[in-house]
Length: 88
Image (cartoon, rainbow, N blue to C red; front, top):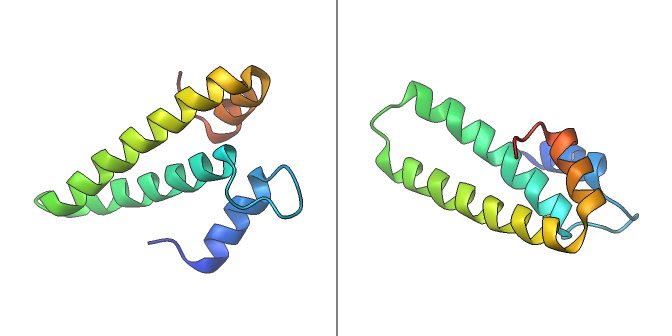
């Protein structure tokens, strides 16, 4: 679970305008942050299958958003992938 300060910091790093809180890059960045946190949790709690399912759903959602963003904005997509350290 991300704290409010972690969310604000993540949004601040990725936002494109002053009031940008729900654009595709922001959503992808927040999902990436949540996925990283949940991955750490699952390394410690290997039998937590409910959280594992949630992780898989988040990964799928992020994949769909990244695919959509690639179709609509190639330059922004490349910048976001590089900034978040995701592999294509």
